[in-house]
Image 1 (cartoon, rainbow, N blue to C red):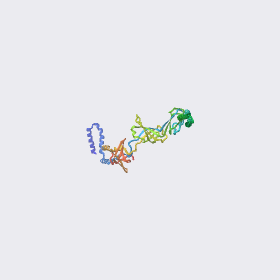
Image 2: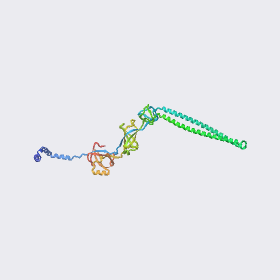
Image 3: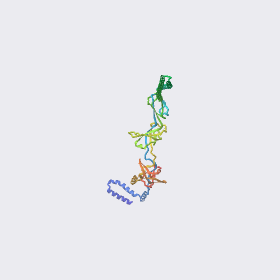
Image 4: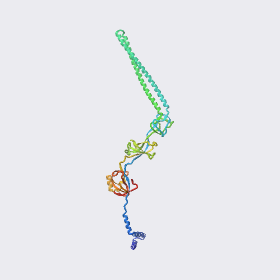
Amino acid sequence: MLFTLFSTKYIYRSIRQVIPFWGLFLLPGLLLVANGCSMIPPGDAQTEDASANQQVPKSPAVDVAVAQYGSLEKDMQFVGTTFPLQEVSLRSRIEGQILALNVGVGDRVTKGQVLARIDDSLNKASVLEAEAELAALRSEVTSLQADVSDGLTQINQAKIVLQQAKSDLIRSNQLVQEGAVTRQSAEQAQNAVDNARQALVSAQQQVANRTSSVTAAKRRVAAQQAIVDQERQRQSFTLLTSPVTGSVMTKVLEPGDLAQVGDQVLQLGDFSQIKVRAQISELELNKIRLGQSAKVQLDALPGQTFMGKVTQISLAADATARLIPVEVTIPKLDDRIGRGLLARVIFTQQAPNQVIIPESATQIALDQTKEVRAEADNLATIFVLQEDGEQAKVIAREVKIGDRINSQVEIISGLEPGERFVVRSSGDLQDGDPVKLSFLSES
């Protein structure tokens, strides 16, 4: 203790010689520090140093993940719009006033169902007129056919007369040779034959002419029959029938409106299946093919996913935006699905066949030399977890890596699905180091 006081006074005098007067205010603090250091018992100081040297280093905390198959490419998603499988515009094919309209928007219709009726008074008159003309032409054909029959009768009679005249001419020639009659009688018999032959030819010509007339009349009948059929068909146009089984999407005209030829009356849709049309970039066209599966989600039906297939890929792209229309067809599993709903089309990638891990797992405790070699040989070192009871340690393992996309790495060999590996560590790791699992670790 006496030595301590003497040392303090000596230090005080020495400092006053080199420190100005204002530095004396700092001196008491310095003396307290010096005295405090000398006041610790030597035994206690040795004990604290020994305790510090005996502390065991803490094991680093690590985040562990489970290796599993995956894909580096993410699913592609596009926004589209719903449409019915088939859209039909029911239009008027004649001019007339709409007398009745049996359906409204949203009503279900079946193929062949009568949906509307148009005034047919003018068409009825046209049909009656055409039918009357057809009847007159048929009567003309009948009359001409009767003339042909008469002509055939005349031909038969002319043939009989000619045959009789030929027989008389033969007898007259025999009698002339016998001297029983004069040559004049034979000449008269020859004239009779010539007249009978001429009558036969004339009758045959008349029958041929009448037959041609019958053929022409029959053609006129056929043409008029076509006119009658056309007028009857036009009369059937007064009834508008549904060409599909579906629903009414739009009603354009109302009862009492005058419909012109070609005017749209109703718009129908076949909702047995739903088509979703989306626009995709030309850069992604090679990733989509006909028949490819796709998921469809509708904002109107949250929580539901519909599976469909690509049924059409357009060959015409938008010249400005370079977008290509693609159609995905899905079954209609909900009656609330209609036209014009917002849809999200998700094209899934092929089934993954490689293990995918975060890129950070390959960057733990790599020195510069190893990193350069790994990049050259597509090799990397990861740490695989090994557990023995409650104790866990890491084993360094070399793996072969493939592609790297979006901070993800494809493992070609060296890691199997189901194995647990270190993703992040609170410190550098070496082979065999004990570790503690964080609460973020996967089991």
